[in-house]
Image (cartoon, rainbow, N blue to C red):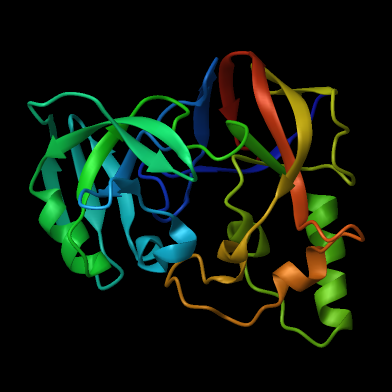
Length: 246
């Protein structure tokens, strides 16, 4: 199956604002650059989770050569280099499993600590270690349309853009989710669909401000068995470049 891609996105730092891209590169590990970095509570030895630290969403991160640029919701912009701390790679907790990360010596640590209102450190993660499920996430325009209709039918406003709530790698122009086990060609790459994605309270947070909006998305995606499912996970079968259609 071949599909057009209506939206592409990733976040360089785990949990920060998911940014739109016109083009991404998929390799064996997933989208290149996606969640390369994370923010950790050094004292608790834990990688920060967005659902517990919604202020992460107020931060936009971009690359400028060998430097990272962090922009706050208020427009403050800090650009700085990063350098691995001398004590090397350590294991920190991420959802109950070990994440191999290297703490960074960088001026950005002060900004992250100020914005998140706690003492935190930027860290570089091993590929895939701070990714909760599969490396590629997929939502479809058909599923988004049906969710919009359900929200309106229940008297709720539809968040705009709705697909931003799900922080998907790929938004595909398909009426139905591709079934588990199927392969989808997107640009030069091919991905294999694995399983439905379970969601958490992050989808009911404004993707820019981190504020809870009362959108009731969790309620509207609840399956009969109680699971909160929307979209599909996928892994990369054939690496390549993916570009947004149109």
